[in-house]
Length: 195
Image (cartoon, rainbow, N blue to C red; front, side, top):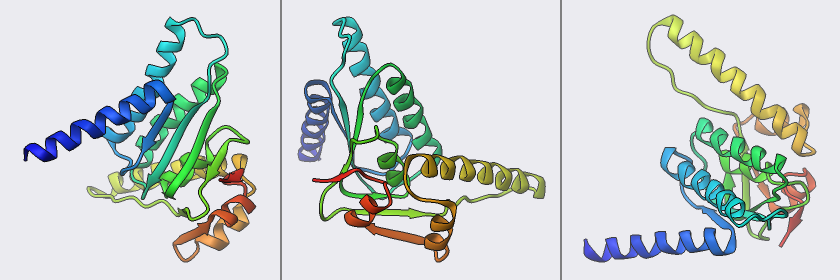
């Protein structure tokens, strides 16, 4: 148990150093409350340090993604911070290190235009949102209505930020999962460069 704790502490220290010194944030786990909190924390910490140091033209921030995806609402919490920072002049680079699936693909596409990249052997996956619902008929109806609203919002963002259209999305996600190579992600404008 002691070795596991030591590795965990070293890993967290390394991630903290990457964020503070190199302005690089790794999201290499499921999108959940904790992992997304860490990304938001590092984004806001970098912003705060820039403010304290009176930096007018901040250096870019890079988010490296290697994730199977996760909770859409948690993804949205990161997107809100990214958009706020971009309005303040920050460039947010996104990079797919190995896989950017589900929420990971949306985060990848949400980086600053011209600065979204993936490795040659990366996998990007887009699919229809899935939700679970329990409760009364009224509660389930409310969940479905909320899910459909969220789906429309996410799709519209994808259409605005990529070359993907509603027709292309529907055609490729009809069977569920749409796997893309880096080349395909480049073709559809999910990324801007393969590195």
